[in-house]
Length: 175
Length: 416
Image (tube, rainbow over all chains, first blue to last red; front, top):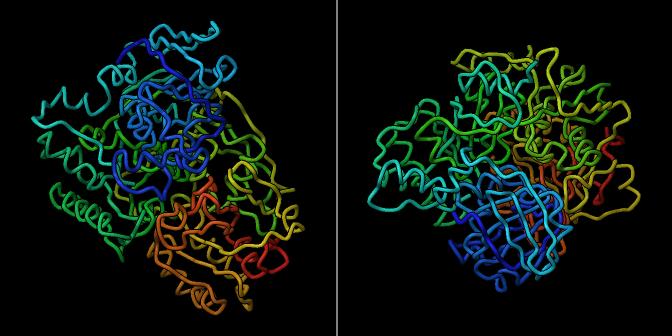
């Protein structure tokens, strides 16, 4: 995990559910499925998002179903998700797939879509590179299980480090 | 000084007490699994799971398979069951939606800590257990039988009053979501306490714990009483550990909810928090194309009974189809014995087998663009039951039934 991440922001509103990020009607595996991410609320977005981009959300980002919507964002190249508040299962899924995720109250007030952000996950600092605005958040302690999982690159990487399989593990994305 | 979840997490992590914000590693009592883990288990060389008798397996989300890809996944699940010696596997015809069938088959006892796949795993709070939904950690839990938790703050809902006519747990939780927001308990534990929590039926508690996730909860717990134990008697084999909060338990927030003035509630599209009393919806004459009664939320006997009471002697409106799915084979048989299935068929409703399909838009009753459904399920997010251009209204089973007769969303109370 890189502790400092920079990227261009895509800004979403409140209550972006995992249904919106991984619709029940989306089929296929990997990118085939990920292209339906935000299909209902923002059709075409999955064609425009680029590797390294940052997703900023409002309240209760990732609410609802436990479907691994974080994997879709990761497949589309999203580097970090930051929101005013984040649904619990989405939060854990993101950690487990190795996608950094930050609960950052006030984030929607310091950034607009298209601007660039820098986040330091260890220091708890967010900087809007475009206009200089700053925001602090409570970073997770370095020795906390979620930070250790992120550090390892996700829960499968953690299991690989312990069991040393000859073939890498992967999430089978079913519902 | 501890809330229920604090006591459960302390007991499962070998600590005297735990405090909100603390991280703990805790042993979990039971979990679920499936074929999705099989390949990774092979690659890791795992021969034995943490405890094959504490792993329940069911296929319910697209059950029976909706296409070849799903069939291959379920075939993998059957291989997983055989290979790891799992006894609690419920094949079609012995199955149900997991959050109904698991309690029926002795999965949960009071005091349990449960981490399992599916967001509605908060359901087990109805049985005084901390049911915590997970997803991508399933493989880890199957191997280790433990997981990390951040001890959550607890929000207490003090429930008072008596449920008015045709109101059930569904209406209470929709009212709570509408009044306090769908993030009222985000990343927190919920405790449902107060005289009404004791007075309400187990089925109503089941719904309120189930939809705890719809107000963001990590778990949503009732105390155990004679109703809990009455249901579990003869089903469970592990000793129950009923867990109540201490008198001086510290709550982050206490919310008083009195239901004396409650009426059947309807959540308008596209959010469970858009809930309003049905009397404010009826005058709008909102036409519907489909009704659905089922799911882990409201597909139990009590729900089917209140829907049948509305439908008896009535017919579903010619422009509407009503789909009914009892949520387990046990519920289905009970409904059959009580002549509820006859009542549904007399009213021209279509009775299906237990499945999650319609609720999550994966099969049986998918909505086309422009269609509207009133549903006894838990979520009405955009595109949830099919086309992104369709609409879902959430309500209790009686309101769904009455609306299917009228062809528009109506108050069920005048039908009984």
